[in-house]
Image (cartoon, rainbow, N blue to C red; front, side, top):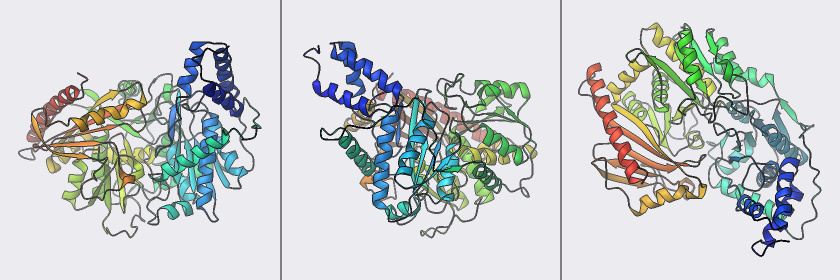
Length: 606
């Protein structure tokens, strides 16, 4: 007998959800909770209340959350409702061509979510192209253009913890051009307001499912989700094509050197085979894979948080580099769209992991010197020069360098969905170790082709007696010292993410580490400098510039329950001599630490 505290509406909603749920695991879990709650169990009722307190928000990053039952978790019912909403939205916009490509990584239930999506689109008469086994996100992004697909879905939670999964959506073909006539968004992830329109369609699907006059669902729970029949398979041919196209990015005449010992870790993800085979096909034969992390494993047994940027994530790779006398360490995140690197610092006699900004500067200078790596970058949108792009939270160093070299530079909002839309872009990066060296073929970050070009760069430096660290000093001498870092505030509840930036809007800082704030920018209501503001480009981010040229940006993460505070301290070397650059770098690093302490105090987390 239910207690008076129990809501009949909640229990009715849960019962309906169970009827709709095709997964016997989550169905059983909810049934046990519901039976207990109906008998007056307060703990069970409270659990149901938490699980049904809302619904996963579909945004420009699609969906990403912990696996589990109910509308606030990733599960087969949430995915099926999302897929039906996406199908209805896309079908309503299209006159004829209807084609979808679907990829998935090796996380728990990734294949199930992909197979359910494929079956839903197949049953609606769409041409469905489904990968034959788990693979990297960049291969899915490439197939968007190869197949001229209208919709792309990649099932992945990227570098999130093992218990998470996610659902990325790309648009292309006729659908993308219909929505964005300039064609810049073809093959890229969605941007606002498309995400809001899809979200509204998904909500209509959910309301119909839970309508009181809706017919009883004919759902047969199945413990295993079979690979759907009647769909086209994307297999080895696509992988070989990707590899061949990546090899075309190399310049073996000007950059012939291949004497490089590389230690590589796939971080238990799906990039291992693609990266090692690509490097060997390019002539980088001396590749040592970290065996404990090479094969895909959804449990991520050696990395609780499989993000190469996390402290300790590269320990096994760095140990292997020491043991094998390596020249370079490379790491992908689990879906291989990001790239991390470490190099040996002879001065400190230790290995040093490069930041995303440092890798971006190195790759950016390499492309400034080489020129665009592939033809076809011109798209007739005004600018006639090739353009390098970086997100606003990335260092300003590469922009300064591009300006000094006469190449165009574009700063965008955070996310490759915006970088992909930069006219004439030939290289894009953001500080969270995301790089795109081939925007003509892949309209998203790509840790596989970036690994190849980084090897080309490092092997050339080795042949010349230079290092990545010495080149970073050369870049600083030319464009100024830029030292970056972060303050990260984790929250328990995603609803709390906006509270930190809301508090800063109420009481903005007037100085940071003793340096007066001379300019403040609120990207919720103001555009980036030189841009036009539209509601679609509104984002919860605050930028503070100080009188000395230092910068702080505060924004909630788009994929994780944390608020990020991006710090950048700058200094101008008195001369271009190494000693002057080192002195300026030391000054900037000291000020960065003062900024770090100051922001902890400002955010109330000291």
